[in-house]
Length: 514
Image (tube, rainbow, N blue to C red):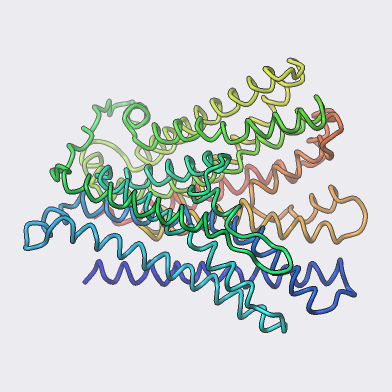
């Protein structure tokens, strides 16, 4: 019964998230009305439909619904496996194939709920403004089929999942891998499919070849996953041993060293951060080919914003405290002469250390590639150090927000909200603030800096500081002292972090750890 309630709750939340296209319609109506005031309604409806199908929906599906479904299914199965529910159910007259098909059915239900939410919310918002919705409905449903391909990948990875944390890591890894494969020419890859399944001309055209390849991939991966699960050893893996701690007077250092050396979150973040760096290598090469050295340096600054890293940092922070409470690690450690403060600070320091190592690898890869392309060493190292430091501050703020979520809620709720916040703070909120700044008179950079002063979006604050140094792609970056002209934006990379951590500690100090 409890599992059914959790599944119903997850489905409801996913449906609510899928209503985002209605917001996108309102944003587009406002934006096009300002820039094209004399466009007739039929043409305006066409422009909004094209914008939704080529920009809003592909990004919404790629950067929110794809990681949500991957992490939700894998973490849910991993939690059941870790608790022994899988072995318990299969000890009854239930075959492994039937049990696996139940998970496939659950995944299809989530994909269907998301597709209906995307199609209906956007269509109703367009109808409210008197626009035709036929093309949007066809295109949105075709794009939503990408979630079926994602489901096949999740089912393939289910046999490798042995705990909730491993499900989160595998889901994040699959998400990063899909982003990397999005640069390939294979239409059956869901992230490539999103760019090629729908084309806009006089009407919406659907690539039936891409649809067929995607569905074939999903079925094939699902069958492989089923066979692997049928052969899987169902005994739970041995938990990581609790490290030895030096409690007096170095309990804090014991927690820090133990978690840094053995934490799966530590290993996962460092690996995923290094992998994410490869997503930006092609961008550096393209800017160098188009704009020369100035374009390469501008691209380096842009790439150092680490736009995809919040999708890694926030979920890992969101499972930190809650996971330690659920698996009993906190109770075991606090039964020894160890204070809650030592555990909280030790865990935080180990995660910050992981963020630092991952960020350093990310920056080193990008700087090394820029030098390989011919960027001047002194300027490149200067930009790498400065904007790498800003990236570190941004990611620590995302980590602190993840801790805040983990302190107030556990399990899937924290994971859901972490991915939603990663999408909002990394994409939706900056787009809205940038659009408002574009409409303002005067200097765009100054308007953006002013409008973002009270917005706790690390990506937005990084963008303001980056534009202060290099406002155009084909101009060489200005002196880094320009950053000091925006002390408010620098403060917004630090102050919210301290607030999130203070609230998290106050909550954890009084939390019931049973």
